[in-house]
Length: 296
Image (tube, rainbow, N blue to C red; front, side, top):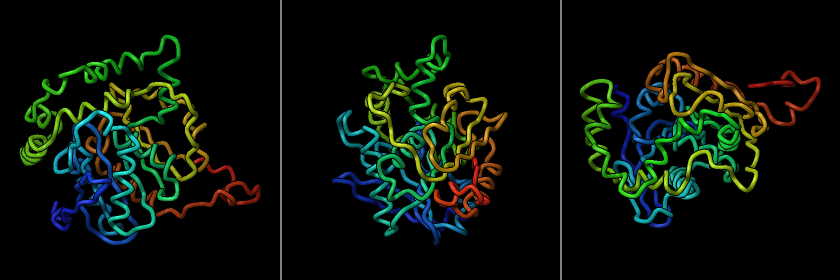
């Protein structure tokens, strides 16, 4: 993928924590935020497809690859990660960005739109239900989503980082020798304790004491239906938390990483959706408007 050669290494500073990201292109800014276990390279196919029309900033989460890994579980609260993304947008000298997130990056993207709406143009979410919808699903009697999350409890245990191995993780994610080598290199530079701190500080699916802000930007959400961890039923009631358009794309024969499993489809869908003009909320609420009743 020769277009990746056009990217350059850059660093943004968030209160003394340096966040590494790869940047390139021109036009509206897209910030890509990966999950666990991963690094910026997970978005290689989408970067290649969108670099001609957009500015790209694909970050390494704190603790991963070339970003700083501050000590202390408290440094991995989602709001710190939100501020890392904001620092990247500021470093790129843009007023706002499209935020794309998968896994912990998806949780960050939801939180970013809720707490930094002035910096959010649109959201693209990959296999992460809205946190309030997830909490409601996990609390439903007889629900299987909580059992699917049992592994997260193991990750929160002290010393869980000692069970992780760079080569094993790379073999899990790499699709060929070249990508496996890149993953090994990145994971050898990463801090496994920091990775586990995301789970310790932000228990997935826990009910929140305060109702989160409603998302008032367009949302494109992908969900691989074969995801064994984040089940499709957790998408229920998402519409209660999105005031703008919500486009849901479910993908059969794709698991937790649909941007790997169906890369061309995901990239082309992103490109098509981003090319559409954004209807204003005022236009959507006009009875005679062409956008009235729009559902995404």
